[in-house]
Image (cartoon, rainbow, N blue to C red):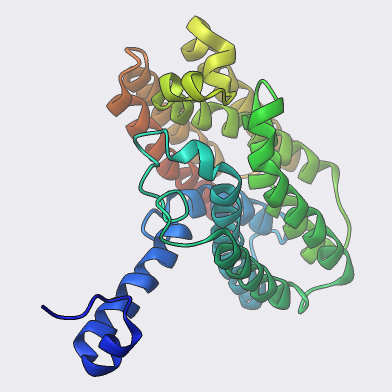
Length: 304
């Protein structure tokens, strides 16, 4: 019988086993960072790109785009690691999350902490190439990412806090371009909070039974039988604010074309979630990537 992969002597004797063990360990870290599920990164990235294009009147520097795209990926990954560290005891009781590396015992909390710190430091190194205000805001962003997992224990609608954490690239983008914060950036952040409540309520509807069992709070539980209505009202607030930003900036018709496509997608989401099936709710959540993309295309075309 060949030696077990955890036997160092066996690994040294059998390079194939060593490569397999390294590959398995690397795969566990990639899963921990959710690199196999990019939807979360995209839901952070689209609002950041909206802000970057609006703040720069459609002409951001190539370097700023690189910094925010790579930084978003790194910080989303670090946020996922922090989330799994905080939720390890809960994840093991939820069917969808019980195989996550920390909950399954593949990666220890100590190893996860080192990984999260490494990801955050690389992201911070990128931010150091921007101005001082953006650097200062990066500390706030780190606090939001680290504290969000614990809001699920104390807030009735933690999705609102998620909207701030997921949307904090907005003020950072404006700060990097303008070296100040603007009223428009605040309104765009509020819009993102409404959007996050909408799409993450769809996500929470998938896990509602498990969350009730283990005592985690969510908007799906708080809204109860009004969950679908609340989701659609959140979308409505989101679109009203975005339309107001467009009118205030006198943006070209292409912007409203992007909003119209996004509104159509939100109506499609209603059709997916109205029966409250897990498959439909999860599909609606994932489809928000395309909603965010449609808005970005509208912004980019209007400001070209």
